[in-house]
Amino acid sequence: MNIKSIITAAIGLLVSTACSGGAKQEKVMNKDSKAIVVFFSHAGDNYAVGNIEVGNTKIVADYITELTGAEQFEIVTHKYDGMAYNPLIKLAQEEANNGELPEYEGDVDLSGYDTVFIGGPVWWGTYPQVMFTFFKKHEGDLKGKTVIPFTTHEGSGLANCVEDVKAAFPGANVQKGFSIYGHEVRSEKAKVEKWIRSLNPQPHSR
Image (cartoon, rainbow, N blue to C red; front, side, top):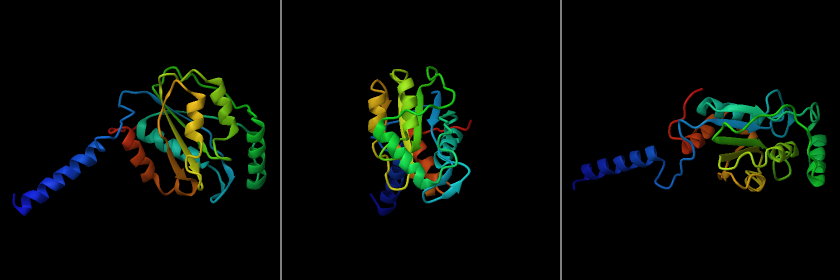
């Protein structure tokens, strides 16, 4: 084989690997599955990004909807409205230590969905306690479904979120999850796109 043939073959292998995502890449979504993004997002005073009108996790949830056509359910509580960052994290720590389950507005029927994205910021090593209120109300509802955790953070990564989702929904097919820095979400949409492509080779618009 001459050098030109070797180069051509190598390029072909690289293209094939890129298109397939690699032989070991598990595809957990398909174009016919119905998906929903369940998330909590905190606007207002946030670490590293200041006072924001749209929470970091909300932006990621919107990217997911744009890229996959997933519907959304936002876990909304007004308990933290208007709080400065330091009092907020103190309250969040107290809630976590006491196992509090703050109430949220409305609810959603998850029975019609195949894939459920679950996202939120990392507060004290896991999701905010209001998300655990949602988990408790819906324990048993995600049996057999694909569940994909994601987080926004400033250094914690996924923290204990994946493990806590697995504990809350033991019958679900919980994936390894995705994390992104909160200060990156407005400028690094490409990271979310790359992650979504790894889940589904054919993401589609809503």
